[in-house]
Image 1 (cartoon, rainbow, N blue to C red):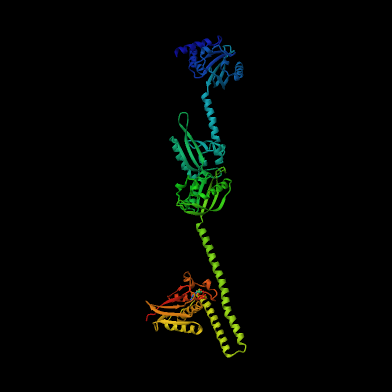
Image 2: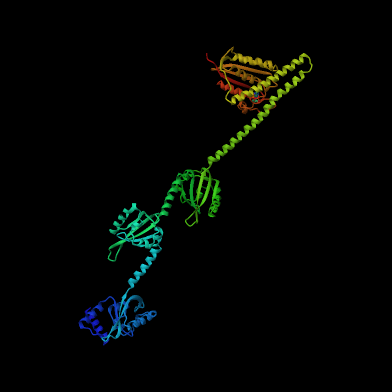
Length: 627
Ligand code: ADP
């Protein structure tokens, strides 16, 4: 160092023009030392630009050693496109002016260009004549870089969508970017210099103390979710990250705050939560899938409907629940949804995990992303098995009602016919009776008229009974009566009105008391006897049995007529039922129905046994009155 210092000293002394101001030796030595140890390049040159001194910093900065530089033109380190600058500088110098902190570029020996800050001063001789220039050049690469960096940072800060604010430890805002302007509606000019409480809702002021406390201790505050208030009083949900700002010495001088507006994210999150909640409480199945058919959501109703858990379904292809023969439906649905259309109330069948087929009504809508692009489909399915079953039941009920109605129409037709027949006969007999005729014939017509009146009477009372039954008003007046007498009376009556048939009464009993309505029971017996005569035209023998069996009285009426097919033995007791083959015999299909109603009201039972072609036996039982 010492030798270098000496060299420098000599160099300076030697290099200066002979007529330069002569300094005291001591001063010269000091100056030389300064020049030698300076971090700045210190160069002197003549007014013609010839380098006359070149210090160690110049050697380091430009790569030329002193020996290489001295005597050469200063243009050696001036980039070709900046040589005009040099001419200008020399011009200034020649006019005795100083150039200060002139930032420019210089070229190094290895061709690099370095940013320098140059201060050029004239060198005067003792007569005040300018004989050269001294040039102090400072390498400002670092500063340059820093500035570049700063410019980049500034651009980033300015263009960031995040709010970036800096403030002092006292909370005074020192910077305020565009996003902050946009979100809080305060301009940079309005915000900078204000206290940060400008945007803190009063009830959250303590947060700031906490944040500043953290920062003062060198700690960062990360993703702190809070609310700040804009100029118009609007609350903004923010996620805030606050970091200490340190100076070059590492001292904390403030805080930088990066905040992100999460209002919409919160909204989205809230919405998502809400949607999940709705989706899960919905009775309808809600499923979403990508356009490729991959299931992306599966609610609880879907789990219930199809038996697959959410875990099992997510990520699977939707064909999981589509019966193979219906897979084309999916192609249709996806093509509709891809075109932005909705598929509404599409009735189809899907397959559950256990193979069960579920009848559903589907509504499928496109799912759009933030940019409105269709990215999938949401599917709402409703189980319509019940609905369809109900519809089926309704249809069935409708059919039944229709059948009943048809039957009723048929019955009215039949009833009118049945009522009209005896009336027509009566009318005819009365006309005949109006004529003169022998007494014998007249009596016969009177008897026939009486028979038709009886028939008419029977029909009308049957119809009345039916309507009473329908209205639940069929009267039964129970009294103890002797069943043997009632049977005998009925046989007597029938024998009298139908002398064509022989009715035999077979019983071991003389009398037997039962509790019931004797007239109604007689009505039943008469009905059975009448049927026995009507449905046995070619056989004359009818037997009536009466016996007592284990607390019951059993009455039977046997004919040897056409008989009843086995599969009709029960049906004949229903209302309006008539065996189709027997329709040539007049009747309304009411007699046996009435008989059953009466017997059942007496807690008894009625039934028929028969062999087609051989005849039938009708039985009924009644509980015996215990004395
Ligand atoms: P109907 O007025 O038609 O005789 P019923 O209720 O008395 O009405 O009888 C219902 C049907 O049962 C009859 O239409 C007939 O076909 C059948 N039936 C009733 N009694 C007999 C019987 N003794 N022999 C054969 N068929 C009978």
